[in-house]
Length: 312
Image (cartoon, rainbow, N blue to C red; front, side):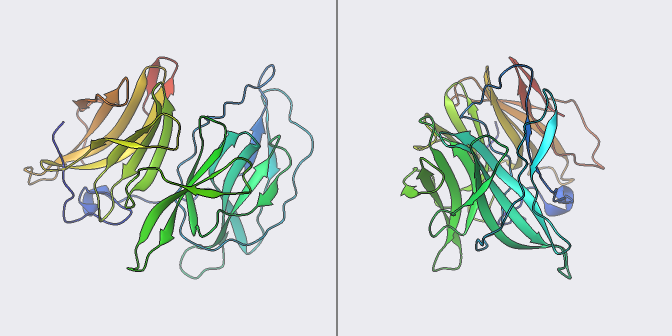
């Protein structure tokens, strides 16, 4: 794959493709914590991948919930936690399942803000069965939780950011066996890494580091979710690159993104796929969906489906 370097339009939490070509409408969805019971007994996997929401650094405060007590019928979904009123709205963040049950990040937003909704605070919720939820304390000295995952030993790992003296922030990680008591752990991840996604595949966990003002996109691999190794760095010497999505499956890992040839004065974009069976040796394919119109820049998603892959 052509090595790609951050262009002059890169931003702290944005993309490295020129902004006028890559502007997106960001839509915040109110996420209700729900439980689905399929046919037969559900098999809960401690490696459940987290959802992808990067919250703003805000302090935590206490909230109360009105959980449901009875499980839904087979194949149905039931609301089990809902925090909202005329002034605020709860938006769900990362969720995972580990040794003490479900652990979820929630973000409470102020509906009355004059210019768009403003985030009030972030909190963690734990449930042994997905039906009854209790608020638990945030990891110490962590201003925001960006992603949760369940490590190979069943413990929880929370990735987030701490402010630094130079008015920036650094990536930190905390580990907990019960979702309540947290200890900081050393991961080997660069302090400037923005955790865009974490997926699990046959060789362990793949972490996608997104574009920031300080670094280009990166890929990291971990056998246990705790110790990470850099396996690919998009240097961006010939292309601007933006990562859209990633997933892990039976056959390995797939990363989907968009790129622009820096020599192309018209800034025409094309999608690309980046695939690996072991997380270390990667193969690139340009235009995996064929040639696309330039008047609209869709963001591609990817999901494993048994041995196959789907990219809507």
